[in-house]
Image 1 (cartoon, helix red, strand yellow):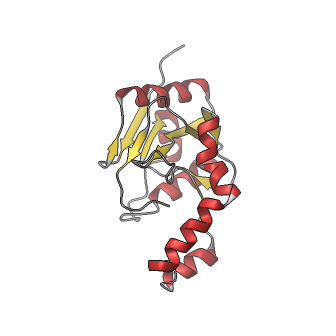
Image 2: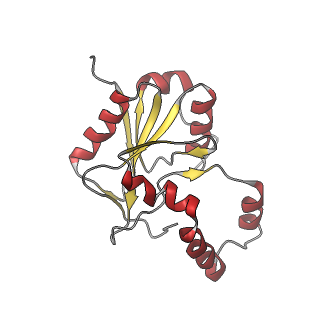
Length: 167
């Protein structure tokens, strides 16, 4: 088989071993329907952090805009979220399966992502109108609309996200 032609995007605040890239490329190679694949991310404590997510919903965006998703309230929401079966299945549950195809209504954040060049060509680049956030959400929605799938993998070595914000 011909090697997969891949574009790689990695945030500056990650700790990852070179073998992680091989794992991402191998997942693309095994799943020709997948446009982009990202690894399960962990914090320094080894606990899963935000690695895939549900598409934004109007009610949560209203709470964020109203300032109700910050401070102590946000900490409580995160604690409750971590107890949620859906969150555990999306994030911690991914550790049980080496490859998990994302479901409709989920997106892949571009913290660390390998993108199939053919998908990049068919979907197009990230939308420059999004200055800092949400371009990954937009790209994921466009990729799925174009008939592609998204995927989350659990690499052999952890990918540690050094970000201060853990969801």
